[in-house]
Image (cartoon, rainbow, N blue to C red; front, side):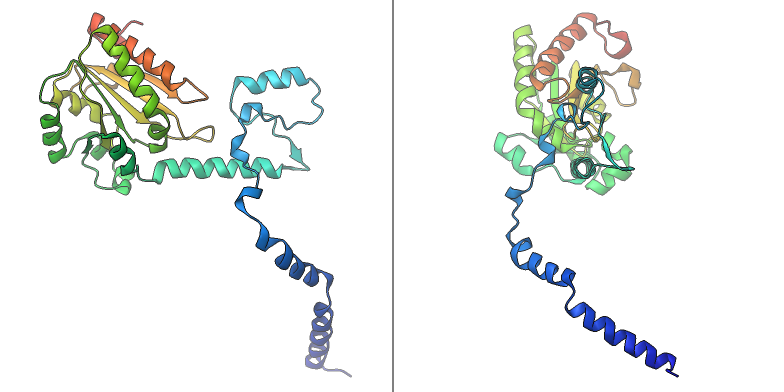
Length: 294
């Protein structure tokens, strides 16, 4: 009678011989030699190139006209179709790509090169790094002592309007919209006859930092362009918050906001003209937030 140890040894030998000539092993070798080494990034389809509301995945929809109409109403993931009980591979890959873009927007540092190329002056809040900014929102609402002094020197003459940008929770949004929205705002203010200081940048800034900016500069209207918390629809959405005679600790109801400034929302050029118009109304009514009637 064969012992258990001897039986295990025989089985191991048989399995080993079978694996040497297995088709899968040959296929893997062939794949490594002829396929994997020759795959380049250029040969892979860029799934993020598709607009979600123009990506029709349901084959032979029962009412295709209505399906397409619903898709055009929102960039949400409607009608993504399935393979058995799971989503399609392309759907899953697009989800992961959008999630990665959102994470990058939050965690990546705003590039200093962007500011240097445009000659934009930078000021700091009390957040000394990205981690502190994300975990201590209160520090992002106040300028650092040196930042406040530098800003006061930068804006030596009291302006009627201060317009500045801040990375917020999406520096990607500022990169995508700044070059279009700033000229639109500044040209609009010039047409209305208002004096505005040179735009600047506040790193690691929260919306509330504009209250101290208002106090330091002594401006009538303060407008901050800030990156919104990114979602899966876009990582490039920016908002504009405006206050009339802002002060530290003022009520949030005193802020007027223009949100969803991005290519698939309110285009930057249109938003800039709208912001300039709102500022004109703020001067006429001497109010902002819920007190401003638009």
